[in-house]
Image (tube, rainbow over all chains, first blue to last red; front, side):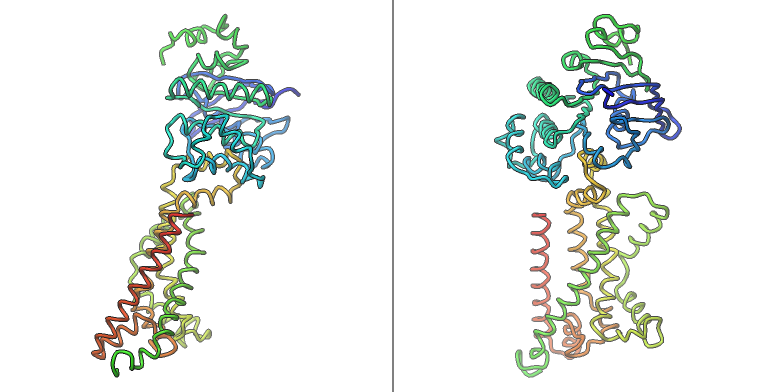
Length: 240
Length: 220
């Protein structure tokens, strides 16, 4: 088994409306998979399923070969997967306390790794500052450090750099790339930014109206897409 | 009353202050340990009948203390359903009445505080690996301003309360007399200066307790 996730005939409906309809999708271990698509296409819903925050209405989601059961998935498995959300909700506490939160939850010792990670994300000098007073980019870097501190096996990124300046975008992308390369962390990136997908992902897929239109190696996806809708989306011609 | 410090009240001043703090403190502790978790649950879940419970709680926030006193009196009187406990005209009856008065305040304000936290906050704590209990604890910490405000409001309502404690405690010297009932007694007897001094002591205690709670609000 070389995949972290496998989805079979997964449908997600809210009040009768189908927002996600995937016949099959595999997320390979250790890859960066980007899923692009317009807002409201079901990308974030997919991430909530992958993070066991929701249970699919139909179908089965397998994680590491085991059928997952939403929030009833065993805690030890749930704790291997985490998400960095587009709108980060930080605790009313210092940057250091926010980053250490995942360790404290797991009853792990909080020592030098917090400082090390803060240095990685360029926030060492703000370790004692109230996290909620930071800028948008700094908050997002806190969120990334908070997610990486407990060494997740899967990192889910939901539009992690939307509305950020190029400096923060570059910094976050580099951290993600390094985490994937050095720790073989599986990354699923959801974005409507095709350039970011192109820069980061090994494979890229297009989701439209809850359906997976195409999934291919990133070079193929952008260079010679099989589906005309993919070509239109990549070239910016798709109006949505 | 024979002068400011020579009367019956002054000989009993410390026990009165002590009993006031004990009754109010116990009632506050009881309503906090029961009201905060219940408020959190009501704020977090969509259980059937939640609207009804909320309406009852909000009504309870405005419940006249003297009505609570009457209810507890009837409950604990010799012919009442809990008469066999023998609690009427004891500090236990006063604690019970004050707990009933303060419970809706703590529960209702905790519920409102928890509901005001960004809904995605819970999801993000869960995503980081929080168990349900850890999630609720994180949420209560986020909502602490509102939760402590509820406890402060409850404290203020019961430390200054007189109707219910008078009814169920009886204002018995050395047994159930507290600051508020002592003030009433002195005023009725025309002893205004002791009544005023007792009032100042009551205000000072309330102020100090609120300062302590506000520190908790800022630190936790």
